[in-house]
Image (cartoon, rainbow, N blue to C red; front, side, top):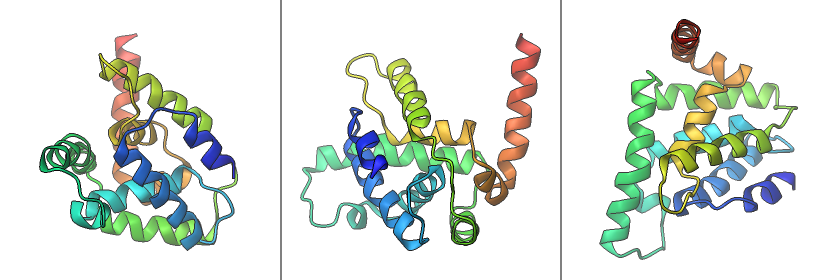
Length: 169
């Protein structure tokens, strides 16, 4: 599977490793043949909506690491989804239905990972590692048509960002 080869090329955080399996689960659940940005986004929505204990069931993390991962990555993802006006459960429901009806054909995983890696380098001064929020930002900034249909609030946000960028140039 191209998805797993692409995923394994990058230095990713532990929550990103969980996202890999959430994305594969979404791909299988929607009857798709390959993982697309929609499946990764669905995985992010699942992680944002799932308590830490369920996400990492069976893994006995020391409390310090647990608090760091939950506070650093999961909280940021939840916060950014909220700031974008995305209703997690409704978006997940609509996007799953759309992906089942029309599975993604064009897979741009390499592009998404490269952009996420670039964000990780900018955001992390020590050891750049792709985190959940890096991938979420890339998807929110470069949504597929299906993601845009499932998240109407993104259209408005993208319009304002593009206007702002045009004004700045």
